[in-house]
Image 1 (cartoon, one colour):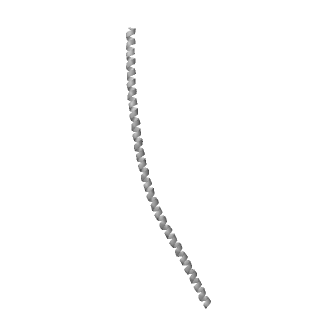
Image 2 (cartoon, rainbow, N blue to C red):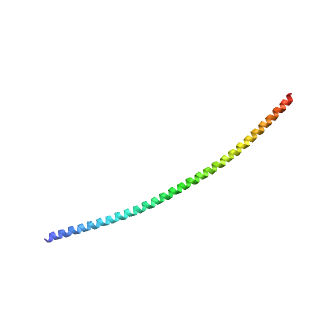
Image 3 (cartoon, rainbow, N blue to C red):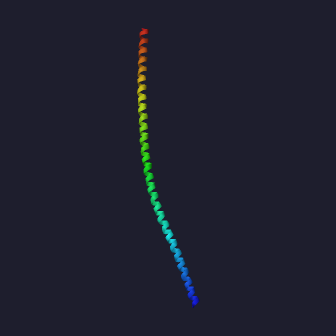
Length: 106
């Protein structure tokens, strides 16, 4: 009977040890899950912040590109006006020269 009782006590101790080990593992896993959830939230916040920063940079870049394009367009328009003025001056000079040639040949 004593052996049977000792055997039950040993089994009870083994079950208790296994339960304690299981409780530690569950606690450890719960802690890990909690930490991972927290890290996930942090990463989601960081992702949103980075997405906002990218949008802001894209908007600023578009504005800079637009400003640069406007400056180039203005410069091209000014150059075009200058070339048209020069073309008109050349056309006038050619007209004047043709008039002089007509007077000479008359």
